[in-house]
Length: 195
Image 1 (cartoon, one colour):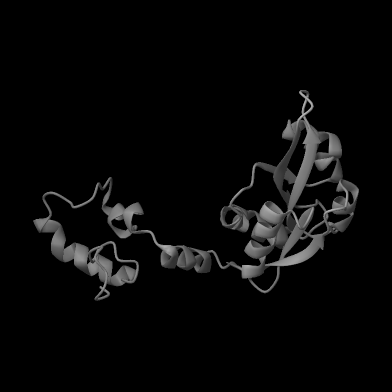
Image 2 (cartoon, rainbow, N blue to C red):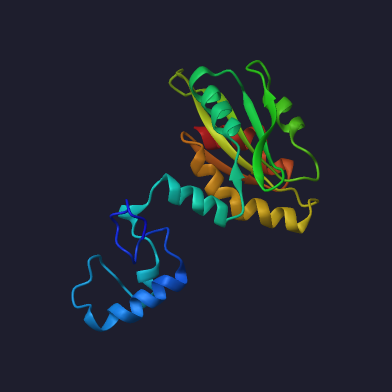
């Protein structure tokens, strides 16, 4: 256990699985009232929510094999707060999600769809402006997982398995859309999902 860690030897994220098994085998006969709710023997090996920290989140990113470049979060914040961009396209490059393309604030939805490759997977965010039936101007930020049928199977699997973790890094996503074909993310579909 790390000397500055207060979470206990069974829940410390810095303890290896082997050491946890040894600890459990020594402690199991004497455990009467476990310190935290446990539902099975194996739940002793999973860090409790109370002890999850940014370090653990980074460890989870590493465990999924995918890191997120800081520029992804910075550019997304600029899109959300300053509205410097209409869209951002992200790609996975060398086990890391990086910014692929940026669309200026004057670019259209057609410019955005043209920025997505025909036969490669991508993640993207699009800031969609629209007018409600009550004549109010609003906008919603879409997260789009683009996985065309013509892309490689391995690429589809990598993008699908990393999507939720990457999306959690972008705080402020309002609508999620998955598309394998341009018809699944047409302007009419976007508009219908926004209202």
